Image 1: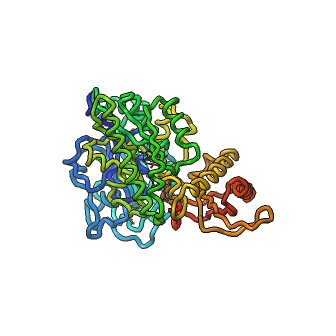
Image 2: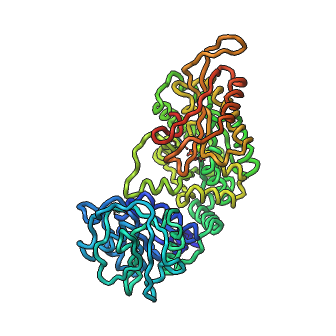
Image 3: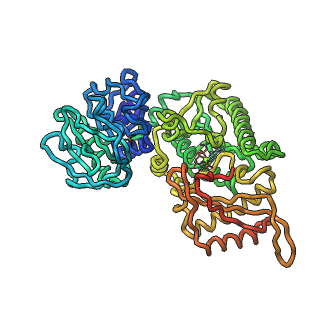
Length: 535
Ligand SMILES: Nc1ncnc2c1ncn2[C@@H]1O[C@H](COP(=O)(O)OP(=O)(O)OP(=O)(O)O)[C@@H](O)[C@H]1O
Ligand SMILES: O=c1[nH]c(=O)c2[nH+]cn([C@@H]3O[C@H](COP(=O)(O)O)[C@@H](O)[C@H]3O)c2[nH]1
Ligand SMILES: NC(=O)CC[C@H](N)C(=O)O
Ligand SMILES: [Mg+2]
């Protein structure tokens, strides 16, 4: 297979989703991949002439604008001439109607958010294909203020609700469909089947997208990219994303992949030993552990500000990596030309989305731009084998690569580690306290069988001391904060509803076993307004 052939949209039938800025656009892509149809998302500003591949069909997503307002985004008309089936969802439907006549879409008198009952009408022939196999009346989920006030010329009405006369339309002779409701959300129970009807039944996309197919192709792509002698460097944390990416690189090029785990002095209890054991021994990854804990802890002395702490840690990570790149070059036969990064599709979507990147609340991810500096300083090129995948797809990929369920299901752990879980200035003693408390808390969560039910859990240290009495003696000691959250995507979260009894037992053990701690508190804050980490 050539390099071109292994790129997913060149080798799988692909449904293109054009994003008009909806909150749910990525879900359309997810739903299609779940039924083994490959799908990619691009912003609604995409020009057909600049697209290097031909989609099997096109879905126009919802969006926050009104099609008739000035500055509202409009799809490149060339997509309508391409001759492939088109499905417009909400704003997408309104866009289809509006381009045929500007009077077709108006502000509705009643906004419609939530459930609606849709009645389908059948006409015979291709217009029935969207609702094929579905009941004539179905529950759908709506979220709109505008509506179609006329049936666009050349279309049939194939579905209506009480509030939307033209809730679903189909062109009489061409494969162009529009629906006012959202099939991609779970609140539309038959939405998955409807998307399948479009992608498979109408577009004729083959359901061949699967993780094992992906692995085989990705390995070939990496080998082609790196060539027979190229060396690749990768920052590996023991977290899910970097471990899966590292295993894939190992399968592709063996020891020419050099994984580096940095001990920043703020790792969890036994973290580096465990990661070394699992990655090196069990997964056969060529791993070097660099103990830079003193450098990190010394540099953090006297620093109280969360963002300055993050910036320092990010910068230090890069220094360690640059030094490591030089060492590898001195030892190995070739120049290090590539850098592995575990970027996921949500990061890609965020950077290309029509909504634009979201505001920076914290300096996150990929530890302060390691890749950027290595690319600029050393001329390294990026390899991002996971950039087409969602987190649960990465987990599935991990399973197929024989990575243990325990590792694949791990809670995320931030690059700066315990340094952002010790409030204010970081010292070794404080990190030790947070680390011990965290070990007890996570251990008890596991024993209680709650680990997989929780999105992320940890113990943090608040060094503003409180008074306590222990063994009849007055103590003046630190406070441990416990945090555990439920979340789907880590963008929003709610505190995990532990039983009172469980928290009491955790508190007792922590106060008894962690020197320097006399109180334990549980954080009940949701995100927003809180964040998941303390700093
Ligand atoms: N201690 C570390 N040593 C080397 N690289 C690290 C370390 N911590 C973080 N990184 C790098 O920063 C990246 C971003 O970290 P992030 O926590 O988002 O991902 P992850 O650790 O791979 O997965 P997870 O989200 O499950 O923790 C990692 O993929 C890894 O490349
Ligand atoms: O690699 C990382 N480097 C960081 O600096 C960082 N800060 C937060 N996180 C993780 O991101 C998710 C959301 O965290 P917040 O609600 O605190 O922003 C949670 O999963 C956090 O653990 C980080 N990951
Ligand atoms: N969810 C949507 O796509 C909404 C489209 C448009 N903004 C409306 O209110 O009707
Ligand atoms: Mg991590």
